[in-house]
Amino acid sequence: MQDHAPAQTKGTPRDIAQVVADLGYPTDWNWAWENYKPTIIEIAREYGLNRHLEIGGGRDPLFMPDEINELGFEVTLNDISAHELALAPSNYRKVVCDIAADDTPATLGEGRYDLAYCRMVMEHVPDVAKMWRNIHAALTPGGMALSFFPTLYAPPFVLNRIIPENLSRSLLELVFPDRKPDGDNPKFPAHYHYCFSEEDKIVPMLQSAGFSDVTVLPFWGYSYFVKFPILKQIDAAFTRFAQERDWRAVSSFAYVIVRK
Image (cartoon, rainbow, N blue to C red; front, side, top):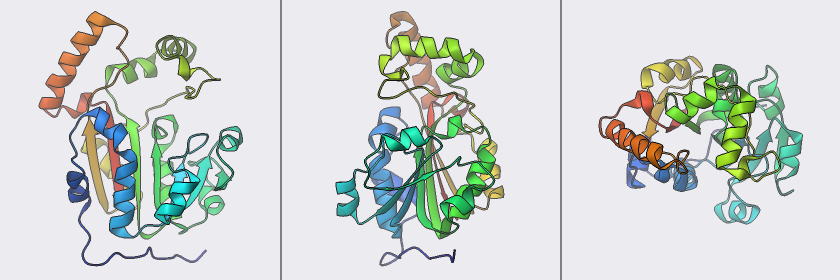
């Protein structure tokens, strides 16, 4: 497929750091969740990116059909699971494929999308470097991508990584019942490959995938210990201490924003 350049906005666009700063970026995890959609909308508007690919969109796409029409976007949903995609509304182009498979660029369409994004997907991909190479192939020249993911070595994610899947699943479902297989937010096995906010651990891989402009935004905090009062207080104090000192080795989440 022939590459299509994304539509251009008037004037010189702000750089990504300024776009996020103008949205009021702090390093608090609540902001990350509340502003994931506004960040994507702002990036799309700033750079004129209208053809979108949501990776791992499954049952819970970011934009509903009425929002897509209002914003003027074209959104394709991707998921590795046909079952998950079937749970989404029918008003989307849907593509079932593994984002890290060899044939994914041909399946998605090379140079087809202006903007790709995913939330809580990257940790489930066993070969993240291949995932990013495939995203690069699917993007138009100047296209962009954003991934929102949990990071190591935040204690809950370290535990999830080292504890056997059956045990970690049981513990998570005990605290958050909606994470059961038949719930609204089921748990999937996690690998945490390249799930870091430390730039020296992730930026070289993204540059090797072909991206020349990389922004990494760390966040601290989570609610996993909310039902354990003493542990919750100790963990919250440590998290604040790490956040104030920008200890990215124990950040909790990150946005990675890249440009082709």
